[in-house]
Length: 295
Image (cartoon, rainbow, N blue to C red; front, side, top):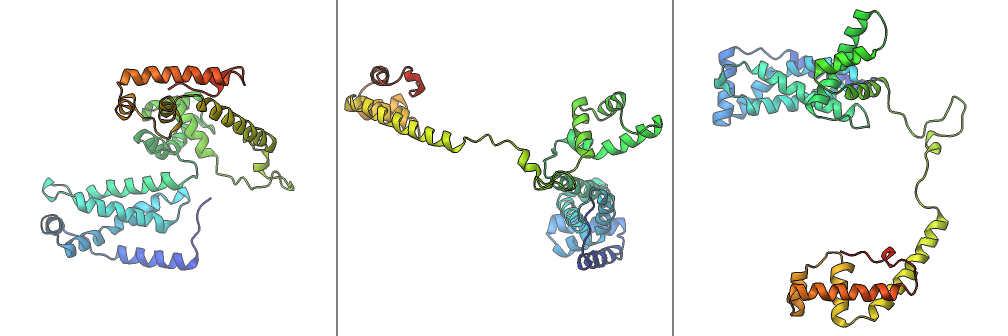
C-alpha cells in the first residue's frame, strides 16, 4: 500500500520541488570550478551552489521509487544524502560531469533506503540481492508480455536467475516476498473472527509447572555441588572454582603462578578434584555428567 502524506507534508514537498526545479543549470566550466573550490579550498558557498543546482536529480530519482509505497519526503531526504556524498567524493579533474557522477550516488542512497524500509522483514543488501529486488518486477513483466500469460513459469525464473547472475532459489524467494505483504499479528482471522493470528503461534517457553520443577531441581543440584566442594582441599576447591564456576575461565598457567606450582601440577590437581566431585555426586544421581562438564 502506497504511503499518502497529509496536506501539510504535501505542501512542503511541493514547495521544495518547485524551488529545486527553479535552480539554474550549471555550465560545465562553472560546475567544475565549484567542485574544485570545494575540494581544494573547502569553500562551503561553492558546495551549496553545486548541490542546490542538482537537487533536481534527486526529485527525478525519487519519483521513480514512489511505487514502493514510501514517503516522497523521505526518498528526497535520502537522495540528498547521496548527493552530498557525491559532492564530497567528486574529482573535478577526471573529465566527468558532476550530474553523471551524482546520479549513481543518489540512486544508491534511495535503493538502500527502500531495502531498509520496504518491509519489516529484512530483504538484504548484497549487490546481488539489490539487483534482484529492483529488477525482478521489470523482468517478470517483460517475460509475461512475451509469453502472453500471467505469472512466472520455472523457465521464466531460470531466465531471470541467469540474466541477473543469482541462484534460482533467490529468485523464488524474492518473488514470494514481492507478491506478499506484511501483516500484523494482531489482525483478526477471517472477516468476523474474534481470534488473532498471534493466537495460532506456539509458545515454546516452559510452562509454570516446568519452571517450578526446574527451580527445585536447580536448588537440589546446587546443594549437592556445595556438599561435594566441601570435601575438597582448599587448593582443589580454588582450582575448580576458578576453572569451572567463575564467569571467566582462568588458565592453568595463571593458576600455577597463583598457587606456586607448575601448570602441569595444576592440571593433575584439577583432574583429581573432578574425580572426587564425581564420586560425591554419584551418591545422589545416576550420571554425574548431567551436572559437571569438563573444560
